[in-house]
Image (tube, rainbow, N blue to C red; front, top):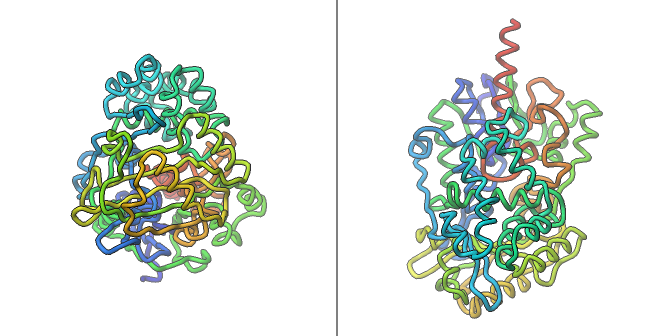
Length: 481
């Protein structure tokens, strides 16, 4: 590694760090990317953690935000990266006891038809994303920028600000539609009685209709590797296995971008930050953690409703009331007996993940931050509830509790894969309230992680906005001479 000569250094190689590095390199900067792990990607890593030949995504698998995000949405971007998308026949399913599952199709109309008397309400609300298109998505993913679709954003915000439980009861009359919205909203890792959880649900459900819920063929790692190749093609350098413990270890550069959450920022750069800013970062709050399982299976999951077998993403938890209760328990620091389980069966869209006849599967449930409780039995019981005989197919399993998740990726503090609580107080105030929250008080030092707007998800927007801000400030400094 060269000791100097870099225009920009990016510390951390999650999707935001990768996008930041590529954005700086595309602007003609010589970039150094440093990752602590033995592979790039952060939440975009894939490995054989159960049996040989079974390839499991260690965090993110289903990536609608990547397709929708302006950070990636450029002419021929995916073709140039060599990334191939695999779309499941059904983006998401929500099984229910003794009744057909709710299916969220790529088609808004087909989904509404399946919801019966709640179809019109689904069209009117979830359909806002489809009708608003890229301009509305861009506005929602850049909440501090000048809105591209101000009127549509205002209409969306009027309903999105509501708690998911309130919104579901106001909109829908059937248990199925209410459960489907709750399953979407529970991705937020918040108590579903809290404000803006309705918005999380509407956004995710709407993306299923707008761009789909696809997977990267071969594993999410391939997206990370493609971005690293792009960086190197532009003249950048990238190194794994380089954990930065202090900014004093980083080569001098005009811009340094940290794909780190506030706890790591304080550890690495605290000695350079003003005391008042350090105090503000120290008050940043982390949300619940997750307990994750990966399985190697001898066959497909035997769902009671066979239609669920065509969906890559499955929300398990039963009715809205059950899901809301489980998430409320977690918010109180408890472990629910029947947790909400987010499950992904990649093989329905990408059979390359396992040897012929085999299947990979992963699922997680939410737990209190830092939990050490083994939730294997509770998670598998929820799967068996809707897929009797599931356990008979298990060839091997691997578990990751909150400690293992944080060891795998230090940004997952206490197992929080969202980079910090995403409640109303930290929806925009990430990591601090500021018109430019990516910038620190230290000239040339920026934060570009999921702890900045718009928050978690494989969309790269934290990296894109931090890099663009750095480039603008560099240009202004150059103009001043």
